[in-house]
Image (cartoon, rainbow, N blue to C red; front, side, top):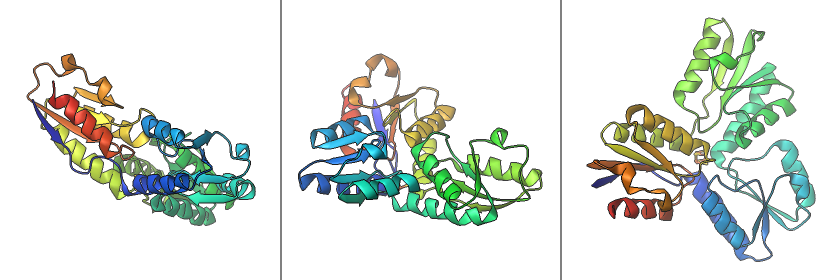
Amino acid sequence: MRVVLADHAGACYGVQRALDLASAALREGGGAYTLGPLIHNPQVVESLAQQGAQVVERADQVRSGTVIVRSHGVTPQERACLEGRADKVVDATCPHVARAQKAAERLAALGCVLVVGEPGHPEVAALREYARAAGAEVHVVLSPDGLPSDLPERVGVVVQTTQRAETLQAVVDALAQRGVSAQVKDTICAATTERQAAAEALAAQVDAMVVIGGKNSSNTTRLAEICALSCPRTFHVESANEVRAEAFAGCDTVGVTAGASTPEDQITAVVCALQAL
Ligand code: SF4
């Protein structure tokens, strides 16, 4: 069975930067807190825990010491709380996410901001709070169906960095149809679009696709959804242990891709497991 790895698979710039900053902070000793998982990859989070990183759910659970701000960023309120409590704040917010936060803050001048993204995702929560703290009314939408019925004549639109361009476009088109003037900041990250385009192209040419990454990873889940559209035999796995021979019976070629929060060693392990079938 031939195993083909997609272009642009695996850890993106922002995730690699967060991991490097965390490793450097942990090497100094004394441990460190992260507010929520540093990245959405359970195996990496487990490895960081063994090196002294403790995940807390709320900013007020940090008592002192070092805290690492995750790649998806935190709300302005959480940032203020962390800066007040920790001795040292290591900011691993991805610069692309930080740019989206600034866009949300600036768009607040329009009075109403739509955040296109998954409600409940920490990056989306932070975008919402940046716009809200700057005085805007904020709505989080994932499709035109989520648009409120009473929108003002002008709105700002910002988007979660890992969303699909089609999702943003659908919301923008729906606003135009309703005669709402939208100032759109397309903050979808190039790492996301590159991974999605490469995965989509590969999925159309293979008998089965394997998408590697955390089940809690938004960008990995989206990759799996995209691959499944053209390759129904798409499997989302977190590790090589989940590779089952029976799933690939009759396959000549299997494609592999990985989310932006999946490190190289996890990809290599899955590719080796597939090659060994
Ligand atoms: S996918 Fe893009 S925005 Fe998200 S962490 Fe990676 S580089 Fe940053």
